[in-house]
Amino acid sequence: MSESYQLHCRQCGRLLGNSPVAMCDECIAPLEVAFDLESLKGQLTREGIASRPQNLWRYRELLPIPADARPDLPVGFTPLLDAPRLGGRLKVQNLYVKNDAVCLPSLSFKDRVVAVALERARAFGLRVVGCASTGNLANAVAAQAARGGFEAWVFVPAGIEPTKLVASAIYGARVVPINGSYDQVNRLCSLVADQFHWGLVNVNLRPYYAEGSKTVGFEIAEQLGWRLPDNVVVPMAGGALISRIRKGFDELVAVGLVEPKPVKFFGAQATGCSPISSAVKQGLKFPEPQKPRTICHSLAIGNPADGHQAIEVITSSGGWAEDVSDEEIIAGMELLAATEGVFTETAGGVVVGVARKLVEQGRIRPEETTVLAITGNGLKTTEALTGKLQFLPAVEPRLAAFEALLTEVGAPVLATR
Ligand SMILES: *Cc1c(COP(=O)(O)O)cnc(C)c1O
Ligand SMILES: [Zn+2]
Image (cartoon, rainbow, N blue to C red):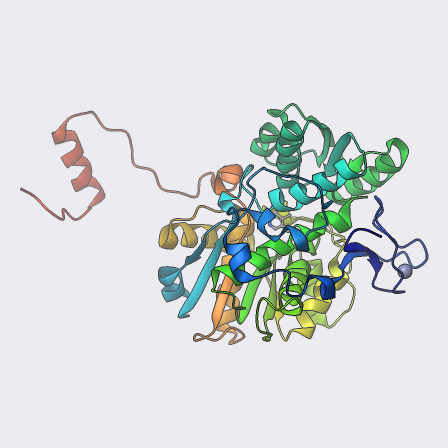
């Protein structure tokens, strides 16, 4: 095997080479990509990585792409913002926001997983790509397939946010709304992948796709000065992001780029679709499937593919999982925007709301370094805010009219000439 990575079954331990499959046919367990980290030790240095362009390809030796691949789309390396004003409101001192609301090209962290999956699709000679998506993934596949010269078919539950349909169709992708839940869409996509030999990024390319999530962890560590945080709070849909941030941290330690340190993993879900957080609270090892009912469509996966692994990561790290109501999600979106100037989608509202609960429960302590994973852009879910924000009435373009408005709304006049 010329490549330094291959598929691995965590259940039976078999190594399976590289091909577009997601399940071990013996144990029906999800496969993941294992790297020969020993061979990378000493090869990768902090200075070497720092000298490369600011995108996720700077970690290419730790991504399952062919050695001769020349990806050039600048995906990732989003800002890690310190968040003192939000921290003040949540009563913690060392709070950071990893801002994937501005991940390029399609404004969610899904650009990372798609970037890696499409390099793999190309290596496998697949010309048609697609996904089962709640919206953001469809946007990322559609955008990057267009630039990469792939044909794209994206499958979504009918009834997701109209903006997310538009932001897929514009790229020329075929958008297929399905009358059913995300979990039904996903099952259909498994059949489609088998029947037509397409590369469905989160279905038959899922182990490779999931590796893209590691780059959130790589970047957090590098941006903290090659140091791991004490806590991360991560939104969970299928459970890949939270479990692969952990894999990313572990790999950085294994190749000698960061010092080992315990990191607590905290998972965040909407109460209306909370199979993973419910399992953690009940002490279960596997999630029990749920029927989603929440405004947070991007996290509405009732039967999470990496749920078991997410639960394992959370509980073995000494972390916890929580969930929040639709009202708390909106309040979280407003709080993050009003304190740090970051307009996130509903999933970010989930993270902020859950972080607040975790601090109140004493599970996140004020002096610890905590990173909130903000994964998507608020402009894609403005529907969730309909009727929630206060707007002023229109006034005539005259100073007197504006002064009358000031009096009417009782706004304090801060300075006059
Ligand atoms: C998909 C998604 C997630 C969760 O990702 P999983 O890896 O499926 O757990 C979080 N936030 C946003 C905005 C997403 O689109
Ligand atoms: Zn197996």
